[in-house]
Amino acid sequence: MIKVIISGFSGSMGQKAVKMVNDANDMQLVAGFNPIVKDLDPESYGLDKNVKIFNELTKIDVDADIWIDFSIPTAVFDNTKFAIEHGIRPVIGTSGMSEEQTAELKKLADAKHLGGIIASNFGLSAVLMMKFAQVAAKYFAESEIVEKHHEDKIDAPSGTALNTARLIYEARGHDQAQHSSQDPMNTRGGDYHGTKIHALRLPGFVADEEVIFGGVGETLTISQSTTDRQSFMTGVKLAIHEVMKQDQLVIGLEQII
Ligand SMILES: NC(=O)C1=CN([C@@H]2O[C@H](COP(=O)(O)OP(=O)(O)OC[C@H]3O[C@@H](n4cnc5c(N)ncnc54)[C@H](OP(=O)(O)O)[C@@H]3O)[C@@H](O)[C@H]2O)C=CC1
Ligand SMILES: O=C(O)C1=N[C@H](C(=O)O)C[C@H](O)C1
Image (cartoon, rainbow, N blue to C red; front, side, top):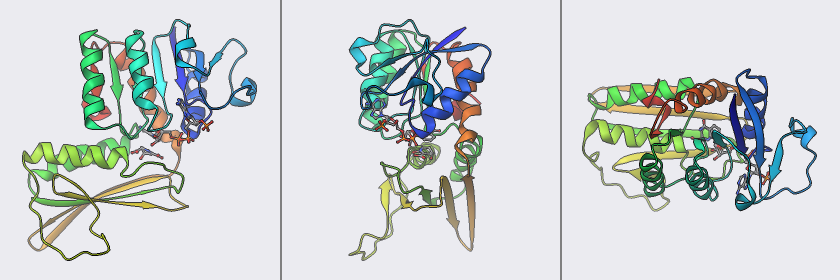
């Protein structure tokens, strides 16, 4: 049995993860972590009576193999560091970590030969979109990203948009050329090594992204649309099985599928 802790178990993604683990015949949910809500009714969150709930990292005393994290951008670094330091393999979906934080966690896990993953997106359509964008980046010198999310998303740009921009930059091996513009209202978006990122937050969306490549007389648009958060669970399950075999921290589901 793979023993699992879920950080952020009461949130939208945390609840999907609770169900996925409960339904898996080779996994056991041993604990949930949430420092905000105290005295919650475990049953109403799909937790079996044997599942322990912790409100403080330092109080966590259960034996576990996997730390699933769908919490908040300001907490994910400390949560992941805790998991690695305690030999619990991290499967991290929470967005908002800086490249420096990710690199520090990778160094820590790799030094302990501990498997784990930080994935900006566990959805197949998004992972394939990123792979296709990497290929297109070799042929098109210029691109921009438009990401669209629900109105409750805390961070911008999305982890997926940032990871897409990083993969494009790596594929090209240099910054994208800039065009000068007069833009007193800052309408040209954020910038990652020359790739502009535009973030929309509106009711009606779950998570969508378009990567638009422009060349002389033609454009190429690679787009994906997430309509149900359940779509992320196939990737989470696959990642759990994969990191049990790994001895390092993998950055991106696109590295293992
Ligand atoms: N990689 C991927 O494929 C995906 C990643 N995500 C990312 O996952 C994260 C969570 O998304 P979502 O479920 O929609 O958000 P929610 O706001 O629904 O859930 C976040 C949960 O984290 C809890 N929480 C708050 N502080 C902490 C903490 N310090 N440690 C642990 N838990 C905490 C919140 O508790 P409370 O409600 O009590 O405040 C809440 O239950 C986001 O960063 C999002 O971008 C989302 C979808 C897919
Ligand atoms: O907050 C979300 O909803 C999502 N967050 C992730 C991100 O920041 O890319 C993954 C997906 O886009 C959904």
